[in-house]
Length: 419
Picture 1 (tube, rainbow, N blue to C red):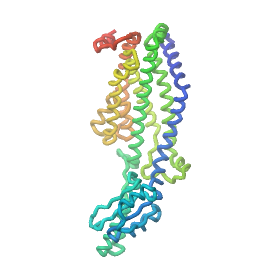
Picture 2 (cartoon, rainbow, N blue to C red):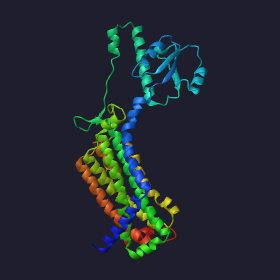
Picture 3 (cartoon, rainbow, N blue to C red):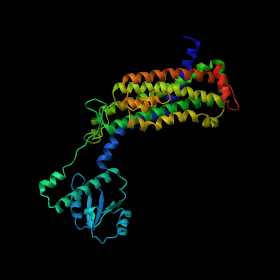
């Protein structure tokens, strides 16, 4: 083993142990699995209980819709507490009852409600999307029934008119079964966000480590003992090892939670995963996420290491790191583009560019928009670009790590790259 490689591994081991022994590292690593479980359980709990037990009062100026609406919402599965109050009840009285927490809200039904008059609901639960959807559904059904009776339709005709329309949306790129459209989007989006978050946090950690050693003058002793290339490589490998441990735990627990989500939901007394059940993560998807994370981390951490070598203080890093951070932010801004059209031409181009492929290509693949060949080409382009970026960053690091004072100009950086 060469001296440079041995020094690199020694420094990597030191950086890795320094981080994994931290209480914060252990805490965040353990919180990740809790987040994965919460991702499955919390939406189901919200859907189950967010509107249960709602207390509403109805001011019915139509003298027709109030009683049937109360009858509809007070039985299972809604089981709300609803009453019709006298039509001359003022809104001020009802608002005072909301303020006193005697009711959650009140519905005002105008006299021309059956002819399209505007109903108004006010309450402390009006911001709840589940409650709003259920209330709208209940009002629509009651109005349709009363309109049908006004048209003197018989029971068979009314039943046929009110028969619910069942619509299920499945995400599919050609496979027969498909998966929940909402669930596929949620999984893909979370994976992309985790990649962005971990690459950014640990890339910045490399930069801060370099800056701290420069400002404390420890760097001078380190460079006297090992070559700058070994020092930079050790920092990137050590910090990356900690990041790899963390994301492996997160993805592993996440994949297991999604695979056994029915069992997990059963622990909380929830039967079934619901219409928008999150699809399981396949081994291939996890492997692709890991490959793009490793390459993306090396790609950006090399840039951050070069930024740390270019500056002499913590304050300077805020300005100099901005271009690197903005490159990552552009990728995050394109997440919606990928989710809307995973097989679109613009998406295909964006996921091939090494600046953004670490974040966007895993998301595109999970959504079924990328073929294995396209993934392979994207990995190859990212690998070549990573090698070039690491070599360029090593040249900047070698010269800048012992320089103090003003930041180098663009012309000076070009001169460093030529050394």
